[in-house]
Length: 108
Image (tube, rainbow, N blue to C red; front, side, top):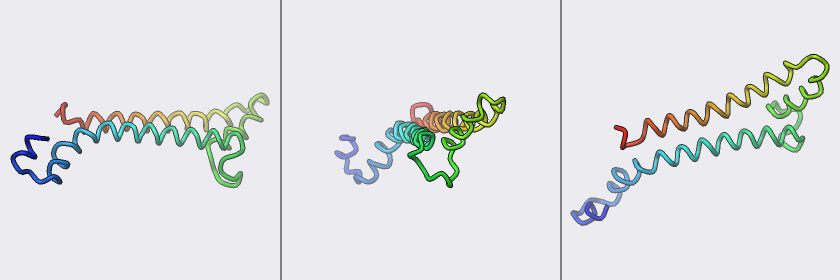
């Protein structure tokens, strides 16, 4: 960066060509992990009853309602929202890892 500044490269070009490509990978991974944590936090709060209103659809609300049917033999009522939450959080994290690998300038 100092060498580019020394030869007179514009600061915007330094940011776009040198800093941004090296920062994009970690920022995307952190953002996708944060998104997955936000999804899980919303589902947890809805499961506890302090999240979104009961009239709004939420995976946490579906899991809470399905918990009452767990021992009555209707286990699938809790299984499918739980698997959906698991697959959603896992897919967001895997997407972030894939983006990190795809945008890593050292792997090109």
